[in-house]
Length: 452
Ligand code: NDP
Image: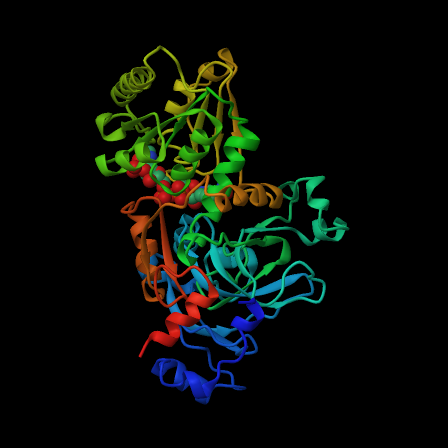
């Protein structure tokens, strides 16, 4: 069935018995008025309310996710000529939502200067409205969103749709992360993005699977493929192998013919990493002194050095030879960085995109210069990398890893789980998708009709 047809107005005569009370109430009362559509309802494409449901962070309630996220009704954002309004079917939970709620290291409201912040940098959804310059997408298209917002300055220099290939928009000082440095992210019924942020939804994936991978997977892709230039037969050490970034880093290593050694903190997480294709797993709990802490005593230092050497030997045991990782995949930061520099091979690369445990990195620089190792900073990905990486998902080569799918009401809980490191892989949340397991708009509408 053509997408336009799927969205054609429902025949009230045929449908009215099978749709639920929320939808009936909505259809009978809110056409042409400002009220939000109910959560879990996919209306006809011509419906566009002025207001929407959203989980909102405000400056006066920064803190734990349980406290900082509050349900509100806010205006549906207007779009500019190069932008697209998307009905959010499902969203993905990322650590940047935790940072946004905490207001650390800075309040995102001070960055975008808007009075409220809707977090969320991953989504799947349906294109609802397109700006006057947008030619590549139309209302009804099923899509996912990547989170790199190009700067106006960059866009002004872009003369054709393929210009982004010639230079990297990540180089622009005005580059931003959608749903973190911009106020309208994915934890709302509608979100707005630049047209270049839109990618086709993989047909075989559910809304929640499609919403789950973009931010972490595209970041891991840039880190390993573009920045570290990981080669077949090389070895990569992956910190947090069962986390959001880690589950994709392991799969990318496997795809490239490199050996991933994953670091985790539990048996269950170890099993996940092995199932994803890691060559071996190290449980960091077996190395109680490994983590660097500020203000360590000479004794702490000696204990840590001893654990670092044991940790290095654990890598050799997995590889069956005295071989060090060519690439270290870093995001933990302060606690692990000295170990990362120490165990990395001669001429190896430590590629880093975050400092979850702290930003002030302390390490013995002799290990770096004597063995000519390189530290490479990396941040998200550009549109070309996102397009290429998304094709691998569409072909089934890279797979999303969702530990649980929660409801719209559970968005603060989902962030709290992440904050407390009680999850594996990615957490998905449903917004306008009424239940788990739906792969298309048709499915969403069918489910809606079957609810009595
Ligand atoms: P997750 O929480 O899903 O995973 C992080 C993993 O790190 C956990 O699974 C945990 O694994 C491990 N970890 C936590 N504390 C420690 C520690 N003290 N020592 C060693 N390992 C630890 O987060 P994500 O993977 O989604 O993100 C990680 C970081 O990267 C966040 O700070 C996030 O904001 C950032 N990020 C940055 C991006 C960018 O573009 N710059 C993009 C995506 C993420 P275990 O307990 O099993 O060891």
